[in-house]
Length: 348
Image (cartoon, rainbow, N blue to C red; front, side, top):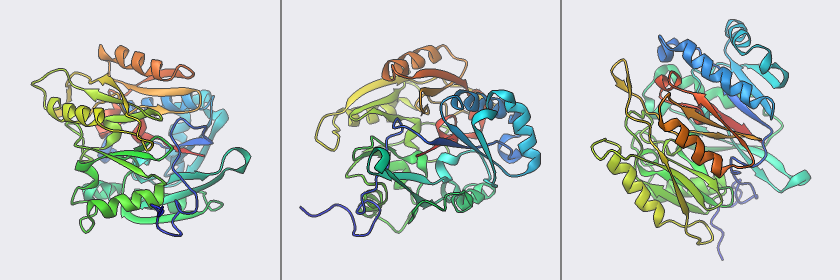
């Protein structure tokens, strides 16, 4: 049978993108500092990141990016002693906190002591050139201390939040984002799929329709549907039929019910609630419980001071009985158009 991978690509060499629940070396995070993003909400964003770091450092290393000594001093003061024992700080300007989208995507091949790590670098154009102040993010992988790892440049625009994988060959994404003309206008769906196969080691690509209201990414999948097992996903649903999210999330749900993993096994589909619509300073927030992060020993779940927080924590607690599920208050962080998963990138 002909290989689905292009010769000499990372996938052809045996590399794959691992599932998020596989054991981590650490988590990369960028401290919030961009006042164009956080005007009036910086302290709330810092508090969310403080909670995240305190939850992660007992279980794995946290690599924290800061642009200057002044921002480092502010971060260290906010974090306090709770996170300093397993915290490594790097002076790298990032533009903003959403390292999921501009950071490297780590790859592995082999298992255990024989496991080898590499990474893929994708082009970051600030969500279709929407924000000039975020463009420094594209240079972050060049400045990270990753010289010991093989590097593979994919050469196309892709944000890490636009994809999710089960680690064994299946990837899920959205048409509204990956096929958006402000990303790779000269590429068709088949060409984009081949890049995903070659640089992430997947063989089975599943396409959902669109994302949620208020999302400036044109529909990142990590706001709507996530793998929690090899053939199990959680997906957000909106119960209010008058809400703008109701129809697109129902369409995604119906598609998921027809989808299979790389071995042909139908997906098991669990549902998460959506927070009730809420606005801050007249703008609808792109709040979602699907934007959780799976780390060693813990799962960090965004919460929004709503009654539905408890149900989201319960559902995800059942998905990860071997990990502690921790709610992170993102009612201020969401002002920057993202929450927990958007602000983390796992390394191996």
